[in-house]
Amino acid sequence: MPQSATPFNLQPDSVDRPISQDEVLHWLEAGRLSPDGALRHLIRLDSRTGPMAVGAGRKSAQPSPKERADAILRELDQLVGLSGVKLLVREIRAFIEVQQRRAEFHLSQESHMLHMVFQGAPGTGKTTVARLLGQLFEALGVLPKGHLVEVERADLVGEYIGHTAQKTRDVIKRALGGVMFVDEAYALARGGEKDFGKEAIDTMVKAMEDYRGEFLLILAGYPQEMAQFLATNPGLLSRFPIHLEFPDYSPPELVAIARAMTVQHQYHLSPDAEASLLAYMEEHARYWHTNAGNARMIRNLLERSIRRQAVRLADNLDHVTRQDLMLLTWSDIEGGL
Amino acid sequence: MEALVLGRPNAGKSLFLVNFAAYLGLKEIRVEVLDGEGRARHQRLSIELARRHLVSHTPYKTTALQTIHVDITTAKTAHRLTLTDTVGLTEEISGELVIRRAIAIALSRISQGPMVLHVVDASAVGYSAIETVSLVDDGIARYAGSISTYAILATKMDKESAKAGLERIRERFQGYPIIPISGITRRGFKDVKTFILRHWQ
Image (cartoon, rainbow over all chains, first blue to last red; front, side):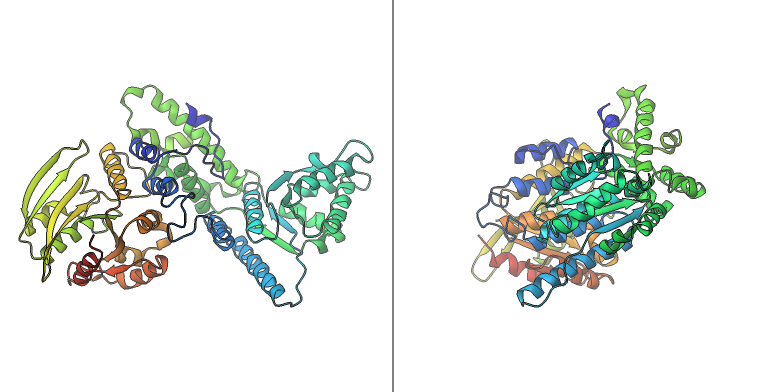
């Protein structure tokens, strides 16, 4: 079953795209495309409206930077919860645009110190937001590339003296023009004074000065550990003016995430599955949070449910309807809990 | 000339067709129903009967292309207009092949460039957030709006929430012609007629 082997991704990848208008209609009829998706592909493929169109349509084919920034913020808005993060990202965008306008009027600008600390448990959306921020900064012209380089302690810290600085510098070079995202950053301070982690921190601090404005550094990790980490490295605290908190998802938010993930993969939850899932998570709220992995836990749970659904249907494959193939019931989910 | 009527399920596409025919003075409607296999059926219905047969409160009453011919008579000439009703378009993938096939047929028609009348239920937009409901409407506006003569018909204007809905539609679809209409108060049918005649090809 190919579906059960596909991991749920928070970022949708559209690898498969129809290549002609006829194909769009065939896919639509076969149930591979929703009507709105079909319309988007028709627009793309129509010589009068697609990207190759010459001056056709009301909107120009190449979206302006502002439109791109708007689109990225819309994508951010579609993430469940995270209201504090959404607000702050809007503030950052407004700040950047105002600074750029001030420059046009030859007014002095606040220097762009936008390095950030993301505090939150695993699976609360830190990486997803970091990726979107990279794209946003690229659209706003702050960063030339906006790509995300995601690293952790093992990618930065070497095995012998001098190795760490080299390794960290290599990572920073890869991240130039984009975002360097250090997950579980507090682990760099784990080993005490003699640990090479300290060297990695020093190298990053130096790079923040050397490559000022050329990359965005994001340190991420559990809230408590990060607070402790920053408290013991006062030089760091002052260099990261922006702190974003990623709270644990509430049970209704987790259910909303489950719903979004299933829809994305052309499954859907039966109403009783949704209700029972919510009840279950409210009952086990503490277990489901911090250590269980929040959204990532939901993703794993759904993958297990899809496999269980496959087992449930496999005996009777000749008689299943399209609806049956899409439906995840509470019994599918319960077994995976 | 041909005009294609598009919109979400239960936006009021079929009802608009019947009401518009009644407004133009038709006593009887000749409906040509083209099903998914491409077979045509002809039905002759009085306005009353058409309202009962073609329109329903449950979505997906229309699963085939339904075409009616109406004459718009002006001082000089009679204009023959072919109005084609289509299945409702959703963001979801329908479980039924009949509906998916009908949607494919409806969308394939757009590229042939008939006039497109895009029906949006203003009252529904008024009481729900448009951001969440209008991916399909966005698609229709962007596609049909750039390749054919195109207008948005904001329907059910007699309902309470429709005024707020119309505001939102105007905001969202800036730059496109928007005609508020109501089958009950008969508001806007004259504007639709004027619009069609002005863009006659």
